[in-house]
Length: 256
Image 1 (cartoon, rainbow, N blue to C red):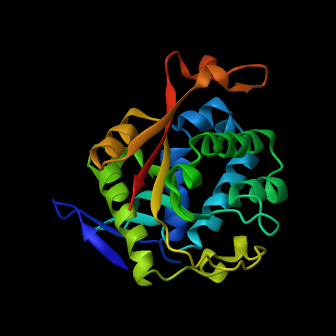
Image 2: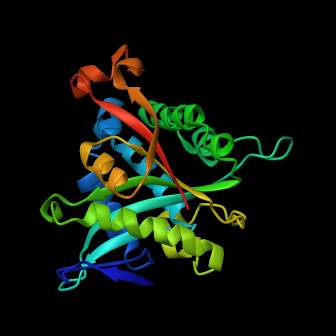
């Protein structure tokens, strides 16, 4: 499904399909993982097997049908992507762990990937989205990346803005989830999971760059918590040693 076109007409924002899914993963390889602060801090970028585990998380998130790509209107190349995941409030006695916690326990084997999942879970817990906003489901904007040659075209903001609009559309039943078959043979081992039927009432994100923070602010996201990489330890030293001083990660949310 196509959602909108950039002002200059050179890019089209659309839902990820079986056709564009491989391109979206390539954007993650080229535009997100080598540059994302948390990937660098936890050395995901240095471990090819950890990269594959992170891409598997993207594949699982894509099944919800909320993830998007920006494609060039001239060549149909996937230039940028955003992976979004519905997160439902755990039910005591039934499902007490989040999607990321379960993914970490069942499918992560590499130390850097497990550390990244722990990072996400801990930050989400401190932001306390469910109780803070009294919601049962939110749409987490997990990963946003752009290929280097397509940067400074406004794609990050356009993708984020559209991601919020798509999350709102879930209430109208307008989203068609992907199937495991759509992900290709590489992910055929994945087990079908029960789709989340509760519509999201909130969009959340962990901004880890100045670009995403600026985009989030312009769209009305509220910063809830600010986390220092000085406090994140991996392989015996603060992650700020790999990133430089004063870099932070911000947990943010937008009621929809």
